[in-house]
Image 1: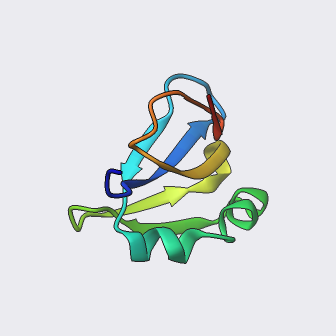
Image 2: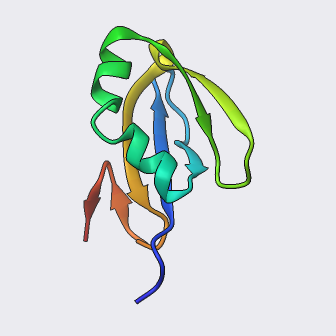
Length: 81
C-alpha cells in the first residue's frame, strides 16, 4: 500500500476546478475537525503545504473543504468509488 499523501481540497463558491494543497501528515492532523468551523465562520487560516510554503486561505470564499488522500483516484466530494 502506498504511503498516504494528505491533501486539502477546496471547492470555491465561484465554481471551477477544486484547489488541491498537498500537506504533511501533521498539518493535516491540525486541520482535522477545524474545517467545518473555518467555512462556517469565513475565517482566514494559514496552512503550511508539504513543500513548506505558507498559504493564507480565506474560507469566506470556500463552498466545501475536506481532507483527502491524493493516492485515491476517483474522488467526488470525499466519496470514493
